[in-house]
Length: 135
Image (cartoon, rainbow, N blue to C red; front, side, top):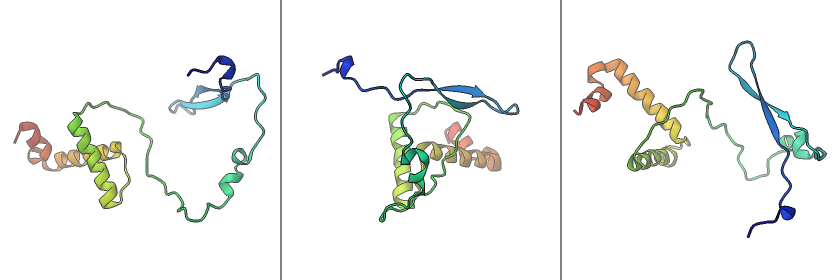
């Protein structure tokens, strides 16, 4: 059942982003508050940083950094359903059997690095050349 406009939830405050550059570097998005007709919410414990200073509840291990990195370049690669399942299986094996919690992108980047290093080192005898030639 659809809500009528009078029963819908109020929208959260929106922010706009402005592009800025520093010393000729890449553009970065800088959030800027959009003027709203509603007054801003009062500062709460979560917004003032008090929550970050409180000790974590017992029984929960502190979160470790994931090791994820931001990448500036992107390519799109199309894979078959079977290849995608193989990639996901490899990710789950890395997590379950080897304790490595990585995403599929990280697995792909590492695989590319290994294959390119092999090509650089072994040239004609590399696994990449042999597979692309069908041997």
